[in-house]
Image (cartoon, rainbow, N blue to C red; front, side, top):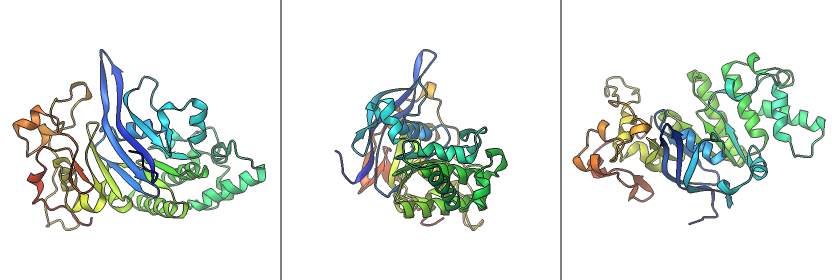
Length: 333
């Protein structure tokens, strides 16, 4: 059911990729919604479908990708039905995206100025106005001496400055929704903290909604209002951030929390989730997490659980979430 408060609604989204003589199911029936001004986090191991879901929202999937089922609605627009010209009007201008790796996402043969200017296409601005706005955006994201650095190329920036430049380019179009695909990956902890604080500040000042993709629960705790935990292409838990850390109700979520280093090394030993994510070529017919789950029973191997509401606004894809009723998570990290 459509809600006017929502900026983005995704319903039963499925994404498949042809491979050999079968279709690999990268995203399996994913549904979620985002309110205006909300930050929603997608968390999970590599290969769980987080980035594929985000690229589907932007219609940036490879040409071979297939979407056999599902809908994506952005501010009453059916994204999957838009033509190339209509997509061009919302990409960058209404939906911005920070990609995972600045060195591959940014163009090495164009100056930072030229790449910011691309966001101004279609806007009636003089050259002087474009220059002033581009410099303002670099200053806005904390790049020192923006008048000089705007003339430079990507290779002349450090890792943290590249990430800031990419944020500036994404924000130059003044998007209403920002998709941030692991924006702190490969950054040291000091720069990571600066980027998180920057995104939080910009979100408040610009009134944006943010879809954050990460494998780091620490980043989730600092930025997100709600969280979707993904595993093998499925959302396995969906709730608000405080509830997720204090009272997780899926074994995979518990495993991710147990893998977070404690501030007190004597408080609890660091745990690792045994095994690895299942191959998309051979997904199990039951719960995809069954082989790695300490609570697994015969039903888990035979039947895929539904994503059920186990408490108000708290959803879990588990046959036996009550087994975790006594599990104590982390209220703060």
